[in-house]
Image (cartoon, rainbow, N blue to C red; front, side, top):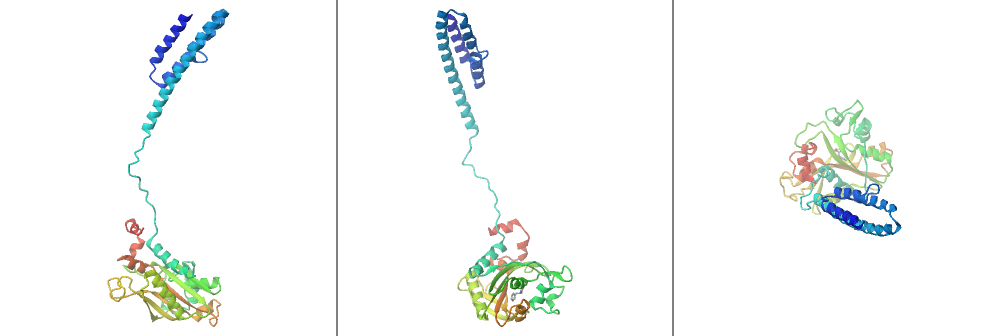
Length: 341
Ligand code: PHE
């Protein structure tokens, strides 16, 4: 009997020596110790036919062989598993020195960047930001702003009419009226937005452009408050050395009215290409809110006074960035826009 066991051992050793892969190792395990048809399992089943003495002895030898076989199988299996793991690691290796992939990120439009800078300055002075419709009735576009029916600004040559009474707003001053209707003074409002005029597009004109409107209505407000506010704004915007000047001008919704200029941020006032040699840059219109406008929204002009101003963003943007054509701002050419990140 022990001869037979020696033979089995020898067979197993020979077969295990020929195993070259993980699958073959599994097959070898099935063939020898598989629960149903394993060679050794079958051998164990013959024990019942032996005499009790032989059964004990052969049982011991068989158990011993089984242990040997199990050990050898485990050794084989772990060797192949380790090899498989190594191969997998090698195939999944990444070269961390390769350059990364560039994911293009979006960024803000130059007009938006400029608008935010202006908003920040006024918000820090206690103003809050308001919005108004881009399509307005004659009331908001003209009547409430004290623009008489015969005023040239009402003409179809300047304004985009949608119907007889509805038109695209041609200035953000319309938001003054909405703000004063929405709340009672004291009021400090800043209203940035798009406006529309029937201008022929050229390097300095676009039929759509941006304005920022300012409105302050409180008790005892004077022209001095308007000048002080604008001076503070231009200093924060362009530097503490920036000077301001007011030129008398006419806007129907203010009295008195003035154009605001500030000393050129490029040359400081000596004259250069940016300010076309004058030393000054035009900023926009301003003035003390006309009593008719206050009355029209139910505010008593004997109790409250206020000032308003309106700045254009597009030409300012063009001057600050040295653009020779404001239409560049609206062509959505990514090569242009990418320069403002
Ligand atoms: N709305 C005027 C314009 O578009 C500017 C302005 C605003 C003037 C407020 C006076 C007061 O030219």
